[in-house]
Image (cartoon, rainbow, N blue to C red; front, side, top):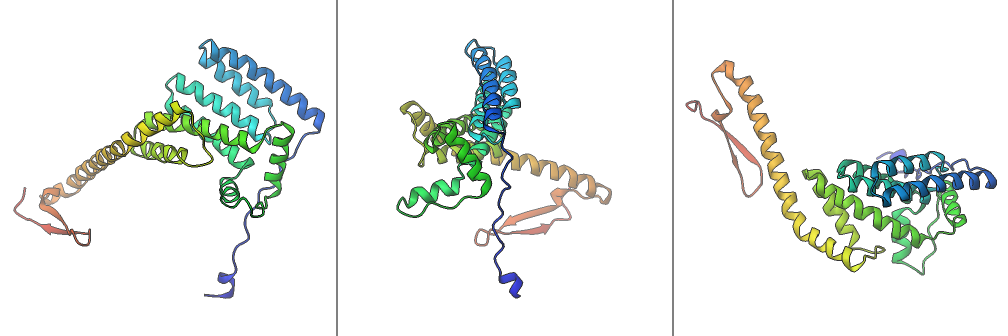
Length: 258
């Protein structure tokens, strides 16, 4: 290994976002809060499509570095999609909410600081520092971030579960498993829902995996038969035997099989 290979790469840091002057920030946040209030009323009345439009208007004027406020709006949009049974839209919005929270409170930082309360707080880059300062100005704490992260994760887990394909079910299982760990604190009702999901999902993941693999193999077989047909052969001429010790496969050719 060369000396250049041995030198660790410097950790990538995010550029600090440009922030507005205090009075302009306050004005934009006030406009965003007004739109959010209208959207909340639409949600309460059951007009979820209008609520989504209202939350998106609130997002349009909210400074992007106010990640907590952005995450609240994204999570609310996810809730609207859940009510409308628009599962993929809910997954997308909840994921965007979680990504916003990760920028103000990186998961690795929270985990390390929680594991060693007596250790020095992990250093953060300029971008995260700006976002944490914005969180403080809004009179929110890291505990508020944790609560919102739990809410968004619950919404994404439910939506992924409803999408129902192998990848989504696996993602839902991972979300529910994450919700069992600190710093997430669940209500008794949410805890019960998580436990039910954790009992049900492993079987659903396996079933979806087997179905998708079988479907894929069927398509490959159809493709193979199309290629082999001009030679008077089909995929039935090839038999695959699994070696239980190694997990590999051996192939046998049966010329008499039509």
